[in-house]
Length: 136
View (cartoon, one colour):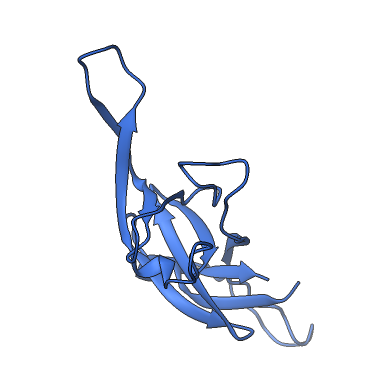
């Protein structure tokens, strides 16, 4: 599993996403309410650039005559044929047990500065910028 820094967490605020190429693969990285997720940028239906689709929500189970909308920002709709996937786990909304998109591990890591020589005078350093890292 390779480690790939794709940018600063501050550059991908909640509700935003970006498409990156990692080890020759096109991957969409999403910030959903402060949590980061990565999906393969290919719809399992016909290979459409899935991560270029619309990020939306969905109707939720409700009583007859009621329409509840929720999970805003968690559902990705394929730009070609409208197939919908849960960004948080890659599963299809229509058939979550058989149809899914490859997901990748994502972590937000604080940058660390390691001391190179014990004889060098050092000062306290605070890390303020976090980086988003995708593992493939």
